[in-house]
Image 1: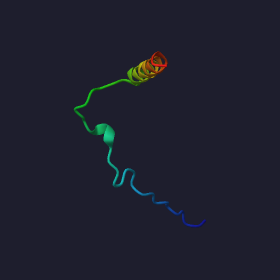
Image 2 (image 1 turned 60 degrees about the vertical axis):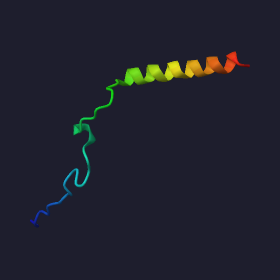
Image 3 (image 1 turned 30 degrees about the horizontal axis):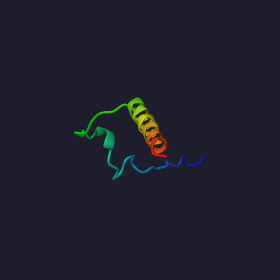
Amino acid sequence: MGKKRKKYLPPSGAGLVRYFEEETKGPKLSPEQVIIMTIVLAVFCIALRFSYS
């Protein structure tokens, strides 16, 4: 039997910053809150567009 060759892989995360470990001081919003605020803003913009026609 021949020799088994080992495959060497680069270390994971080499030179990459792990952003989820860093704490920020900004507001904490859930994805649902972001979607709701986007929909509210879109409806508001559409309402303003039709109110000034």
